Length: 197
Image (cartoon, rainbow, N blue to C red):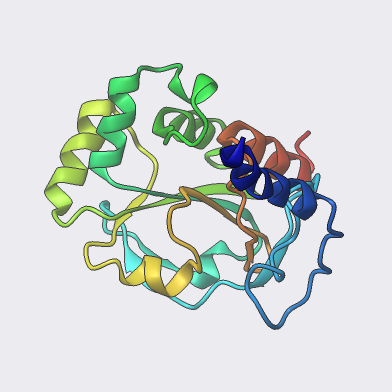
């Protein structure tokens, strides 16, 4: 009986927290209150993406200015993460939340390649560009990829680790974290925002 009384307060804490009103979205103070609540039904954007310039595997130099005027899906990945996802099978992203899905990134790239207001850019965290290149050839992926071997781009451009997908809007502003959404949902919202849905 005594153990029940010791456990009860811990069970009541989540219930009490759930009853608390949501804090307003602000631009100052704790980073936890500056992020919009996940129930938002559309993509929401914060400050501008930091300026950068980097070459992709094909030798094309990408600059922050290249992302303006379009909605850009940015995918952060590594060959290790991609191979781990490959082991789970092609339908893993439909059944396991948060699985990297480069095959879907490729499909979106092929569908939107050449469109005036949607594009794809990926950034690999591999330490060896030949590993990235080899994996891309093996999978027949053709989307652009910048190899960020020192993680400089990741640490400079993206305020939060552990997220694969980000969106930059035509004004060059970075999306708030969309970790509650699947990649499919992100792509739907991108198309809708770009007037494609």
